[in-house]
View 1 (cartoon, rainbow, N blue to C red):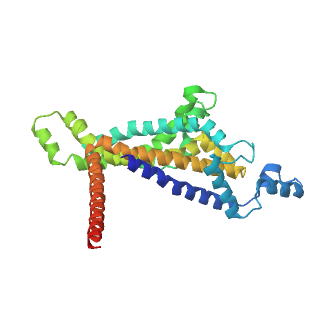
View 2: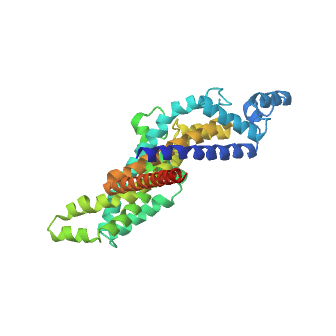
View 3: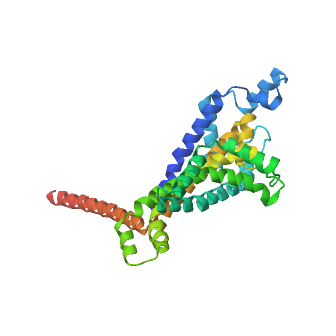
Length: 338
């Protein structure tokens, strides 16, 4: 298990390199000058050229990319923001708790609503409840998140005046709309996965055996069927977290949540490329770690996977031992012949 974790952590390195390479390429071909965004369009051309020379923007692409990677490897430095001249990593860390809070509660809402809906839809297959549940799930998957956020703001903040339109300075009430927007957008994926997995499990022989023994229907569904249906749901959880991180950028921009998404959006508008690159690299690392924990979660849900994993490692160890013994025997035979 430890070897598997180390292997996954090592695979994060090419992922981060690829993300940074794409970010650097897009920032190089993006229209507009950084000097115009920082100094303004009316600034003298000499000042713009001096600023570009100071920031190293006149260097070739490969030189800037290599210098940036060298700073990350040697000092863990994501660079300094063009706007604030502060370390990007420090600014991201200060804003990440808000993004983490939004993502966590949004995923929690998606699970609390999506799993029961999927179970009910599977148990009541082809009924009116099943159809209504799947319509709601299709709505959550299909509706554009920015439109949904604006509609929620219009209804609950402008018309009904029940909830504040922005998060900052409004306490717990300010988090309801952004969490609901991101969470409901992911309910459909969880509900549909749970439904399809439950339909496959409840047709198994051991479910019919449990019913034949006289167990209550609730015990059959939740103790036997649901637990064995959670592995596909756990796999979907990774995509849900990724979707929530992407949706948090929209939610943060619309509801004024001071998080990494809003920070990156402002950086894109201001041509603050170190902030954009640092934010992408940071989110890529976070997502890779989350996916690693989800893979480990599989063994908690289904211990058979852990046994299978240990068996594979044991087989690999036995093969290595057999090859080593064969090499030693060959060397001994050669020594005897000499």
